[in-house]
Image 1 (cartoon, one colour):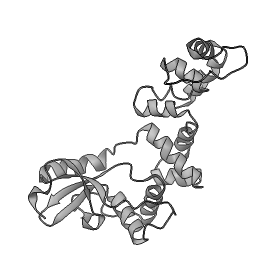
Image 2 (cartoon, rainbow, N blue to C red):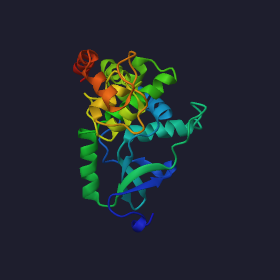
Image 3 (cartoon, rainbow, N blue to C red):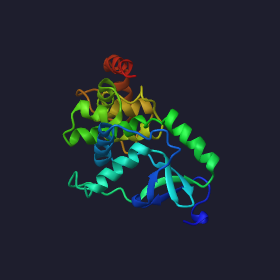
Length: 232
């Protein structure tokens, strides 16, 4: 493969068949159960993080994401047939460098300090698995998280779409997200696009900013605060 295939640190789509594990990857041996859990996670939630590769004279070797690579290879061997609506993840997004020292640094960083999923991505991924019938314990195993952590995130799965989008964009904090309803979320955030009439007991307000402020000030605020304190 030509050296000019990629410039330093480029993110490219590489055919799965062209990828192999790098000797620089510290996780040369992985339990079959861990690979299976990752395969199920990828089949349901997709590939949420790209792989990291080193461009060598003979091809691209994965220095970060060895478990994901093995899980993708397992799904490919099954013909991407694990779920009826599973879309093949091939080609695979890989951040690639031809610089050996940079690849060594990436390998160390990836395997010693794995980047965590954004909380909003966690909520969506866990909810997708739950909708497919996965149990709490299976979701937890798939993402190497505790059941208590998964359960806390799943409590946010029914939030208004505006709240999850704002959380993903870092416009609101994780503590601000679990409000009781859309009107309270809008009041805490300060505004909402095309906000409908505020929900709540009759007579509280006809909607809009005034009604939302009433909701934020009323007795429900204590419940909201308690829920916030329960989150990590």
